[in-house]
Image 1 (cartoon, one colour):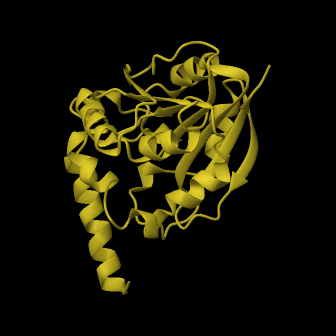
Image 2 (image 1 turned 30 degrees about the horizontal axis):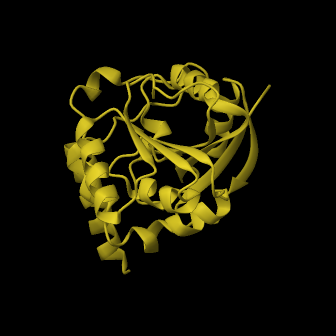
Length: 230
């Protein structure tokens, strides 16, 4: 893509993210008390087309991300901040009929989009959960893998959310964050929607996790894998 087209796409993204901000998100503005990172405003339902854009595979390599994570057949997985279900559908196929995916989102409209996607795909191993801003409402000690794709940086109360996620994981469970590379100024996304590895490590490890793997081979994002501490 030439430079002018790239700049046009960045400008369009800034407009989309700003216009699609979840109503009431302005009240959630703040900074993380440990890292000092500014919280981003969460994307609203109007941003769903961006999640499902045709260019996403080429731009972000989500299929490779799932290979890096290593989703196991028969596992119980939570897609936290599932949005339109882009990853939910893929996770459901990977865990298979003996597995289960919990797709949780704080917007009923997003869950409705996910439900329609799953119906079209004929997938029946997904449970939809309407979460709360600080609580994804997952059952304690039931989840093998929690995935958050470009979601963590938008949380208005990440410390509380992480405590709930830790409770939901089995003792050997994993938490995976996929986040735009905050160290790379060329990644075409708003600065508040990026995170550095150092920021993620500092914030998440503070809540009872340990960072066990960093994979930065995706074009624009880090794959950060955390294990639950005892």
